[in-house]
Image (cartoon, rainbow over all chains, first blue to last red; front, side, top):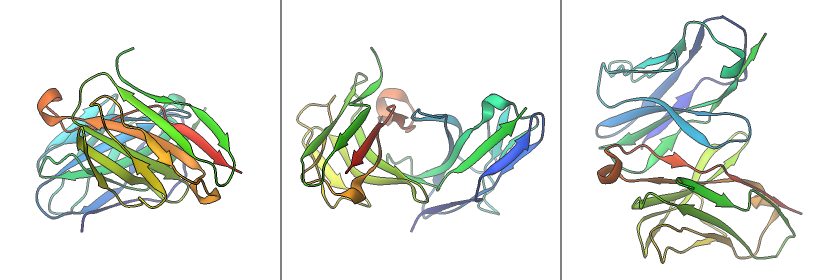
Amino acid sequence: GNSVTQMEGPVTLSEEAFLTINCTYTATGYPSLFWYVQYPGEGLQLLLKATKADDKGSNKGFEATYRKETTSFHLEKGSVQVSDSAVYFCALSVNYGQNFVFGPGTRLSVLP
Amino acid sequence: DAGITQSPRYKITETGRQVTLMCHQTWSHSYMFWYRQDLGHGLRLIYYSAAADITDKGEVPDGYVVSRSKTENFPLTLESATRAQTSVYFCASSDLRASGTNEQFFGPGTRLTVL
């Protein structure tokens, strides 16, 4: 079956630190990969995505590269801000399907 | 307002009562989804709908009922609420043909407490 594994949180960093949140997946077919972010008290919103191997998604200083050989889609940011404190979800869909599989989420806290 | 809305945002009910959570989207997306979010479980799919009058079970459908008589609305009913259904519920929609992406767009959530 299809599944997504994320590093366990919470992750606590100081402002301007480098961020990596690991995500690996198992999928049949051709997965598209996504990172969603959930700010406190809000719904999820798309942060970035990649639809084929070696694609790099980027947005708001965050980046993730679709690595087929390692079945990974790790989220990175060079310098985090307090406003990046949120829960981050890795997700996949297969064959451009409408149904998603979400990882368990990783809570990030950035301290000033 | 354009987008996807959920009501109520907060609800407290008692065990055994029927509760309906509403979801409305203005994009005419064909697909709609209901998830529950619980600590330690992330997001779990309850039900989804590919179009009006077409619904299907997700990962955790027991105790829930859905209907979709109109494209824009996708209500979720707990027929006899249990404490185990205390959770935050998210509605989402998507439509590859309409938006060019299969990205799911999420509502703000409903926090349901069953006493």
